[in-house]
Amino acid sequence: MSQINIPILDLKPQYQAIKAEVQAAINQVLDSGQFILGPVVQAFENDVASYLGVKHAIGVNSGTDALVIGLRAMGILPGDEVITTPFSFFATAESISTVGAKPVFVDIRPDTFNIDPHLIEAAITTKTKAIMPVHLYGNPAAMAQIMEIAAKHSLKVIEDCAQAFGAVYQGDSSGSHENCKETTREQLMGSYVGTIGHVGAFSFFPTKNLGAYGDGGLITTNDDDIAEAARMLRVHGAKERYNNLILGYNSRLDAMQAAILQVKLHHIDEWNNKRRWIADNYSRLLMDVDGVITPAPSAGHVFHQYTIRVLDGNRDRIKQVLTEAGIGSMIYYPIPQDKLPIYVDQYPDLTISNQLAQEVLSLPMWPELSLKQIETVVDSLKA
Image 1 (spheres, rainbow, N blue to C red):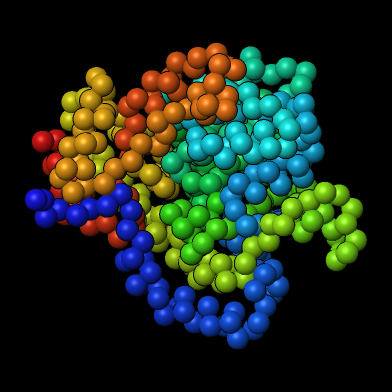
Image 2 (image 1 turned 90 degrees about the vertical axis):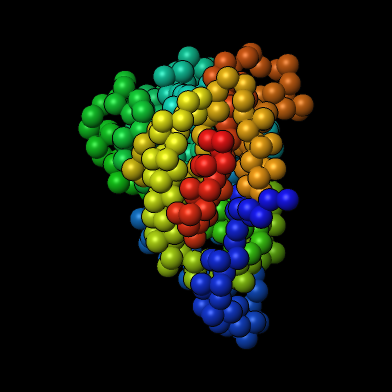
């Protein structure tokens, strides 16, 4: 039996490094007796807004709720259409359907895994009200092109940043110079994802780059009206207690999770830089491996996942070999959203998305991963 044990993710080293800080933060919340919203949540919202450079940050209880509430706060209504990518976790499309709108899927670029901006305009109809790009695996989408299209057609943009906390739009990913004004691209360069569109939606699920020890989410916006609506929607549609104006949700961020996230926020740059270092080493070691395509370079990528493409139908076999060697890997995502049972036969085939669902394989990734472990993963994959 193999002695190798490299999981897809290991959260224990991170906790051990910040254990004292986390326990002190938790004790302060316990001593305060205030466990939902309150001053601790407000302090975290202020800190995360300052970090991202956005006017409003509104804590909610999950990344999915951040999307749902974000859509409603922007005014998306039943019967509206929202253009998005098929290649994402179901919460992306689910949130659109949950508010009564229709997800309209546009194919992706094979080199970025993100929505292809050149295909968006052809999908716009009189019912289209918004675009929802996903910064998949932590790689910023083509936001300059997307924002220009949105402005041209008077559409809202909600960024799904579930996997991309701390990712920065640098306008350097493949295709970022195409069909886009240079001034638009330059104006957005250096912006954190979640601050470019009208709304940003983040997840703090424990596996994320900035992860809580339970569920949590965040809505970001620079629009005062959207922020006011989002704050109402997270507390049953009320501006003040027992004065409910609209139908809302019970979606409040726990103070305990906010306290943990505030501790982690001070470390996020260090952790994201380590993820980039790990990705650089993976790409270096896999550079000349036949049948493997490594992620396209992108300076603002935060590598929530390091995802390769395995060609020639070998992906599932290689995943099995890695498993037998004691090395974790995951397929994100084996079924595009438009092919899930809930939507099956409702949409035309999207060639690139279907192809990549048969090729993608995510390798072990967490900030404390060592060079020796990286080399072991690569050696096993090569073998």
